[in-house]
Image (cartoon, rainbow, N blue to C red; front, side, top):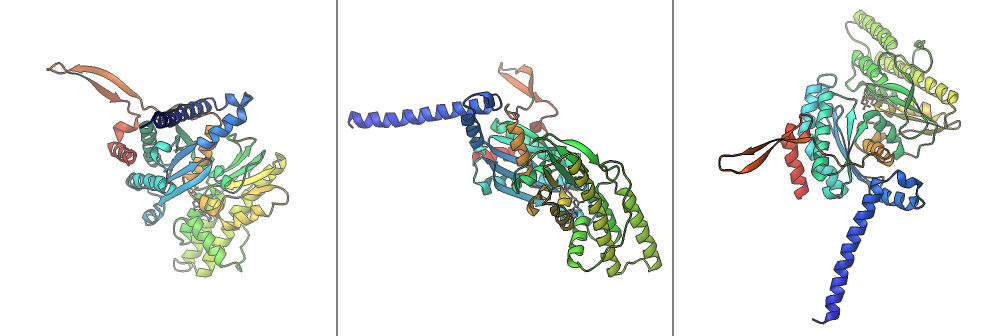
Amino acid sequence: MDNGYVYSVNAIWISILLDYILGFGFAFVAGFFRKPFLKHKWWPFFVAMTFTMLCILALESSCDETAAAVLKDGEMKSNIISTQIKEHQKFGGVYPELASRLHLQNVASVIFMALDKAGIKPEELTHVAVTAGPGLPGALQVGVIAAKTVAAYLGIPLIGVHHLAGHLYANEYAGDFHFPMIACLASGGNSEIILMKDHLDFEIVGQTLDDAIGEAFDKVAREIGLPYPGGVAIDKLCKAHPEVKPFKLPFPRVPGYNLSYSGLKSAIIRKVEQEKAQNGGKLSDERVIEYAKSVEVAFVNQFVRKAFKAAEDFHAKMVIIGGGVSANSYLRSEVLKHKDEYEVLIPPMWCTTDNASMIAKAADHIIDAGYGIKRYYPNIEVINNNIDPKGHVYNVAYINSNSAIKTNDKILNFILSISEK
Ligand code: KG4
């Protein structure tokens, strides 16, 4: 073997090593000083670097969907959702204990599948994001524990994401945000009109004073004999019968940009009960459709009118909608009617129900704002150094009760097996 060959082999190895050290060094520096570097004259370089290196695994388990998604360089690589709707349908709504058990049963496969579909190895992940709330406490816990475990095992940062911020950021799969903006959140548990002057800057300017719009849809739907989730069933029925005219329902008198659904809902339910009592406990199919149509129009019109009043008063450039009810066809068409006056964004249909890709999008902005720098450590406290009778010294590690690992060995085991893959 001549020396030239040995030198060139050595040169290759040295260059690979240097590449690795420099690459890691830059990535580390860029990630660590994300925000401060914006002031540096080389900031475009660092920003570009940090943008190309984000690879986020996001989890969502706040209600009845167990979901995982991978977002790489801002692009969705996979979005896996395991829905529990069929299991809850027989109870006429979400049964919280069952939801938690199903999350626990499915969270591992959903994570595996999201990584698999994305073609991403666990070691390539740079961040883990998870819905931290609001939601069903037991259901949230499963996603949070799984996310903490992945983050702790891989030694990467963990980002907690507000579920509703996720619903709003679902719109980024349809276009970019332009501020100031009015964001309308319409879901099963929330109805809010939000002023956003910048990313992650949420000022609630109006909200429901009682029931949420989705909750009201579901309750009326149940009363008129439609299956859970009632909002979906009402929408379907209305779309199938465009010829049916709604009857007029009162417009609730609520100050400012606030909303109210409870009065309307109760008035309709009372009316349905009376009608059923007069007709042997049943409503005719025609009446069911009429009720569905009237409720949809009354509920949506209230939201849209208040939202665009806020848009006008706050000189918004853009109006967006988010949350489960943003899938409603009538709401979407009513909002889009204003696209000559405002920029209007509606989330793609696939991103209206709970999913993890919207959580990943929100996390992307949270990281961009300078969070997600520190790697996640569970609070492991070594509280006792024991010496056994043979003189061996070993540490007994007690882990704080808020840590993932102690509470769920099953999840830790599947994480270990992912990483060995
Ligand atoms: O945001 P979401 O998936 O869950 C949370 O509340 O977090 O929203 C679920 C709600 C349910 O009340 C459901 O009936 C409603 O969204 N919903 C709809 C439609 N799709 C889902 N309401 C009206 N029309 C729809 N197409």
